[in-house]
Image 1 (cartoon, rainbow, N blue to C red):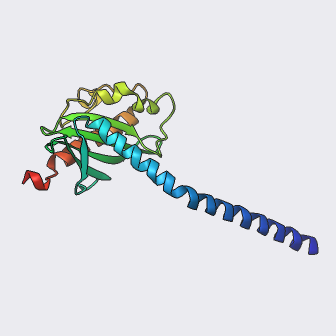
Image 2 (spheres, helix red, strand yellow; image 1 turned 180 degrees about the horizontal axis):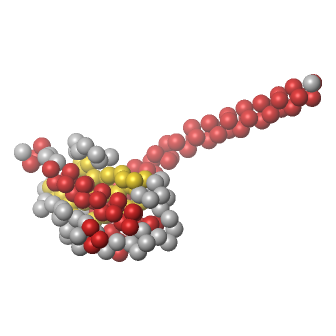
Image 3 (cartoon, helix red, strand yellow; image 1 turned 90 degrees about the horizontal axis):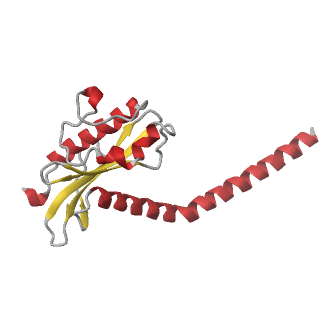
Amino acid sequence: MRKVIILGLKLFLLAAVAGLALGLTNMVTAGAIEEQQIKAAQAARKAVLPAAAAFTEATTPEGMKDAFAGYDAGGALVGKTGTIVTKGYGGEIEITVGIDQNGAVTGVSIGGSSFAETAGLGARAKEPWFAEQFIGKASPIAIVKDGGQLDAITSATITSRAATNAVDDAVLALGSLKLPTEG
């Protein structure tokens, strides 16, 4: 019985030290991780709305994670960006979309920290050719299989459809987003 108690105490001590070490590591790295996530989000906004020199946070439309207004160097509104999260085949897909003043897509960034689509299939949604298909399109946006004009990823219809529907939803939400400067 004594051996069991000693073994239990050793196991408890080991678990306590490991838990303390993990907690301390999380506390030390939390700021740096958050900073990297902010930089990644800013880079995604700039990539999908390249005409913008500065971004101002806007009221987030329902169903979206965030929304920003993009302004050129002179302070004129050039478009809007927003991030939407959808469910793909392997889990959540985070998609950042940019639109111009006419509601046409200026860029799409697909991925996110929890992106887990199947390698070689759904993961191809992150490839440039897939996102480039959206540029210049306005709602309604759909894949060919659904009566649209975009090519789906071969053998990854669920991911293709989820990403395309999310981009269309984002375009609609951003298009209806009114900013104070727009009246």
